[in-house]
Amino acid sequence: MIVLFWALGCTNPSRVSDRSTVPSPSCDVPVFSVGDNWHWKLRNNDRTWLLKRVTAIEGDAYIIERQMNGDIGPIVEKVDKKALKTLYLTPPGRHGWIMNTPYIIKFPLFVGKKWAMAPGNTVVLYGLFGTGSFPLNIQVMSFEDVETPAGRFKAFRMDCKVGIEWFVSFWYAPDVRNIIRVETERDGVFELISYSVKDLL
Image (cartoon, rainbow, N blue to C red; front, side):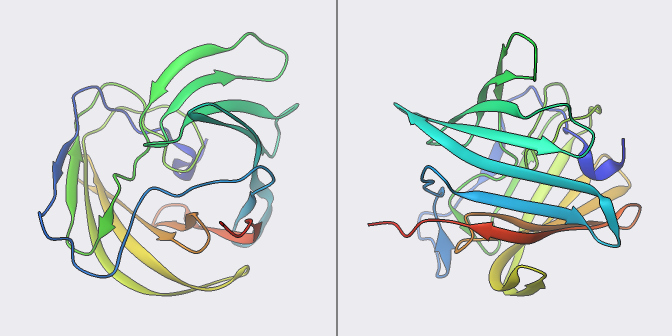
């Protein structure tokens, strides 16, 4: 499985560097609605793609279906509203299991924020899972314009150092309520090609 599709490992509590006064711009954890959906694809490779769709809201959790090329059916995730942790995972045709998997982004976001995660458990980068156990050091570098096949967006750029020598950059767009691009030197660019989110009242 290519590096872009890793679940990156952590067990120890995250160390987050926040400030009492959050500068503008900043954004909090997104709010999803039933029917919100996102479609990503590896640039120059139509065979590598991912779809995610919010199918229900149950109390303090979202029910999200995700399907990747090669899957025999959608994987169903139960995701905590407050921090986007994956609480429960049900693969197609199998019984589900408890995950309690943290999301790689620690909200609220603002330029200059840093956090770290130590090896051990699984971290969700953008809903894909694989193998690996490495320390992560992440920093919000900028708030910038990003061009994707789905459009042009203002997004927070985060640089993630994995272990001692591998780097990942990813961009989160508040208007899209999701990550819109992931880049590594090894695997190229995984980017948003379409999406639909409902206006919040």
